[in-house]
Image 1 (tube, rainbow, N blue to C red):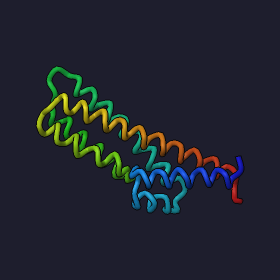
Image 2 (image 1 turned 180 degrees about the horizontal axis):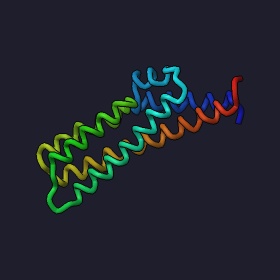
Image 3 (image 1 turned 30 degrees about the vertical axis):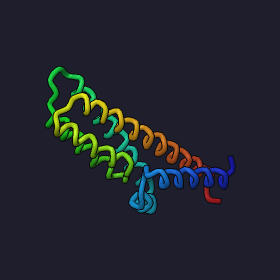
Image 4 (image 1 turned 90 degrees about the vertical axis):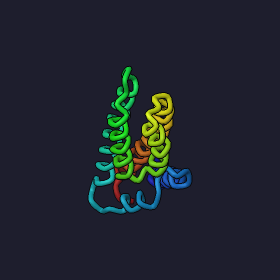
Length: 143
């Protein structure tokens, strides 16, 4: 695929990510940092850490007795991870989660976890696609 077509595809993806609230202006700032590989490194750390935290929250919520304080701490940690890549849409879903863990509602937390997972994996897929397109464009060299 020609570099111009890949760049058009990348721009369409980024426009979609902004329009749907997946990312905001802060993400554009991250993209503008000139350090080689900086954004990819930040994204990879976010994806890895957030995935691990989601698995740990799920594990805790499946225990017979739930430690809601620990669940809350992990949700807060997850929110911090998402802020590192300005995953706006994921950050908004934490508000609902907080209401449920503060009320110590296991059922509510499980519903909120499903919402957060759905939002996270949507962001995950979009960011992975974006990084793949950027790698393909870079591999083609200067145009």
